[in-house]
Length: 350
Length: 273
Picture (cartoon, rainbow over the protein chains, first blue to last red):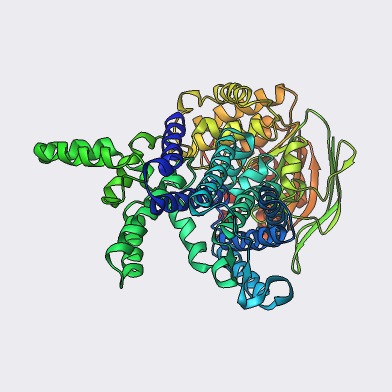
C-alpha cells in the first residue's frame, strides 16, 4: 500500500515536471497519461473493486464533455463548469446504475456499452442543444499554447490525484471492503449485511464522476467536441484494458497501466504508421493473455532469480535498462516496453 | 421472538411452502426437519428475505419483516448459514469473518472487527487458519468458518441449514458442542437437520415440513411417534407395516443410535428400494 502510494507520487511528480524538462510534445503526452490514469482509476471502482465489467466509460466522458462545454459556453467559470459536469455525470450514473446494475457479467457489459451508443445518438440528433453532427465549439483558453498546455496538464493531473485519493480511501474503508465482498460473492455479501444495491450504485457513481470531469477538461483542452469523438467506443474499450494491464482492483495498477499503454501506443504509432492499430491490438492481447493479474502481480524477484540462474551475465544489463528507463513518462519513450515494466518495481505490493 | 403467519411461497404453480404458521421463543433450539424437497430451505429463504413471500407474514420482535432484503434481515439480527457454504473465496479466513462483524455486526472500526473476528475463529477452533485463503479450507473447516461468520453478525436468531451434512461422527460431536455453546449465549437457534441424533440431543422442539406443509410440531420424541410424520418419511405401505409391529418406538430408538450418517432421509430411500 505505502509502496504503491510512493510509486504514484513518483509518476505524478514526473508528469508535473514535464513542462520544465521537455517540449510541448511530451507535455501533451504527459497530459494524456494523467487523463487515462484518472479514467482507468475511475473504471477500477466498478470494474476492479466491485467486479462489474463496465463499458460505460465513454458515456460518462461524453456526457461530461457536453455538459462542461455547454456550461462554459453559457458563461460559467472554467473550473466551476468542470465540477458541474462531474455533478451532472454522477447524477446520471446514479439513475442509470439503479437500472442496469441488476444484471451481471456479460449482460451488464453489453448493457453498459449500449449506453454509450444511445447517448451518442441523442447527441447527434439533438442539434438544437448539441449542434448535432457538426459538433460544438468550446471557448479557447487565452494566453498562448505553452500556457494552455500547462493549465490542462495540471488540470488533468489534479483530476488524477483526486481520483487516486478517493481510491486510497476506498481501499481502506468499510465501503471498499463491501465492494470487494460483492466482487467475491454478491449473495454472501448481501447475507452478511452489505446493502449491495446501494454499494454498487455508489461504486458506479464514483466511477462516473471523475470521468465526467475528465471529459469536461478534455472538451476545453481540444476546444471542439463532436458525438463520434466524445462517445468513442475505442475509448470505452481502452480504459478497462489499461486497468487490466496494470492490475485491476489495486490502487496503483490502473495508473501504471495507463502509463504503459500511452507509451506503447505512442511508440508503436510513431514506428508503424500503417498497421499501428493491429500491432497495438496484438500487443494488448498478448500482454493480457500472459499477464492475467496485470503487471503489478508479476513476481519480479523470481524472474530475476531465474534469469540469474540461466545466464548470470545478462541480468545486470537487463536490470539496468529497466531501472533507468522507468522513472517518468518523459524519459521512457525510446524504450517503451521496458520503461513501463521497470517503473513498477516499486509498486508491486498494491 | 419470531412469528410466522400463514406463510406461502409459490414458484409458478408449485407451492414450496404452503400456509405455514409457527412461533419461536427466545432462547429455544428448534429443529426443522422433513424429507428432501419438503421446503425447509425455502422457508428459511423466505424468512431471511432471499425469496419474497407469496402470502403471509413474518414478524420479528413484533415488527413486520416480510418484505425486507437479506442485508436488512442480517442487520436486524437474523443470521443464517447456507447448505452449500458461501465463503468469499479470495479473502482470508479472517477477512471472511471480518465481513460479518463489519456489516451486520456493526463493528465501529476495522480494528474492532478484526478483534471480534479473531474471537469467533477461536471459538469455532479455526484461529490457526486465520490467514489462509478461505478457498483452501476443507469442508468441515468451511462449515465452521460459515458458523464463525454468522456469529460475527451478532445474531439473535441463527438459522443453520444442514451445518452437519458431510461431516463424520467426530466432527458432528464437535459441531454439537459448538451449537450448545452458542445457545448458552442466549441465541435462538433453528437447525435444519437430517441427522436424528442431532435433533434428539439438541432440540427442545421440532417442526416437521412435508410437501411445504407443517404436518407436526412439538417435543422430538412425540413427533417421532406421530403417524403423519412416519408416513411422510417412510411412505404408506411401510408405515402400515410398522404400525402392526409397534415400529414407531423402534424407529425412534434406531434414530438415536450414533450410526454415522444414518438419516431418516436414507431410511426413506431404503423403504422405497
